[in-house]
Length: 199
Image 1 (spheres, rainbow, N blue to C red):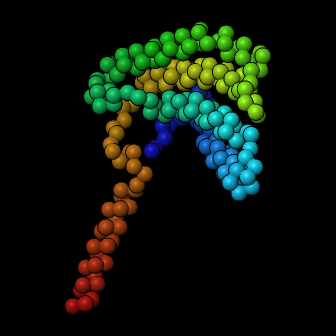
Image 2 (image 1 turned 120 degrees about the horizontal axis):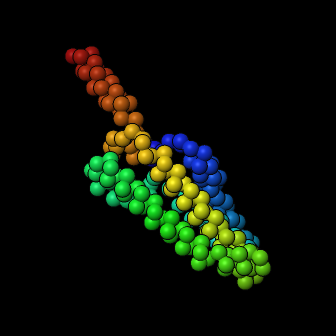
Image 3 (image 1 turned 135 degrees about the vertical axis):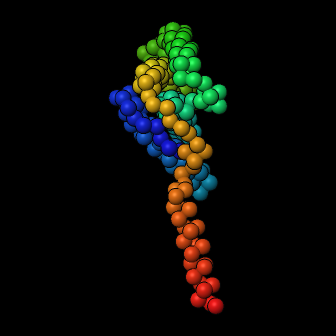
């Protein structure tokens, strides 16, 4: 996948945060590896591996949505969007950004009290290890939603007068097509030369 160009400070912030987030799945794998070794090799399972992996995975899931918004890879019907004239694309963008802002406002309005209460009493998960998952994940949901809304507004502003870009299926494939064409030409020439030498 070719990454979208970073044009604003919001893009740079979201992109940088996504780079940090990309390390987290490797940490989950390491935690689960330690758990498997401790459980099946040493017969001493950990109390913390499952909750820690849930905690990290929750953060990854939330922050992946922010990265998708920055990359403009969120769900939309691209076939219809790319066929539409520019003025209609602007209408689509304004409507989708407005719907996102209504959603974010509604979730924050309905969830702020609960998230604040969980944070203030440092609510824990209720297991043997008892990490503060509710006290950290609930506020993180609201925080990431706010940053996602800011990213959506930034996308709307920076994309408003941007030049139209033609997309092809090759944009999604990380293959150097020109190098492939050149290698096939080189192969044909070398095959032709070897046949001449054999004659």
